[in-house]
Amino acid sequence: MTDWRAVGIGFVVQVLVGLFAFAIPGIGHAAAGLIGGFAAGYVAGGGLGNGAWHGLLAGAIGGIVVAVLFGAGLSIAGGIGFGPLGFLAGLGTIAVAVVVALILAIDSAIAGAVGGLIG
Image (cartoon, rainbow, N blue to C red; front, top):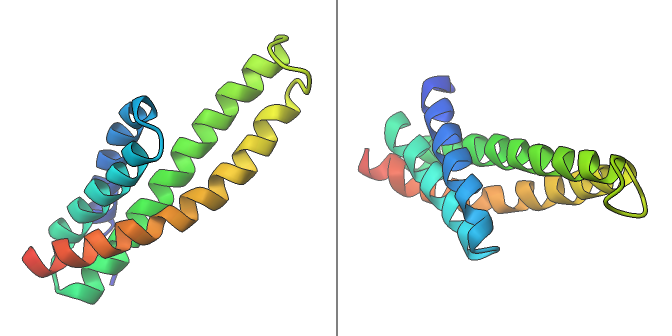
């Protein structure tokens, strides 16, 4: 059974670290996924499988939220004249970022498995 409290904690940790991750693109976002996934798995406990599940959920949800916020910001910036595509620039960014976020949720699942083993 999914412990939504653990997923929520992992999600919040990942979003907070993810907001600062833009300072170190790539490495920072991977670290955000690892830290958030570990937190979710640790709080959920229950071994490798349970920790991996909770880490995966926290990583996927956190990554999607950060991607949507970033894309919305680009869309607003494009809409007020910063970019040739206007509002469409943000939509394309959201689509690509959501796919990347889901792929990066795999590292959250791995870190969640470690957290679940420890917790």
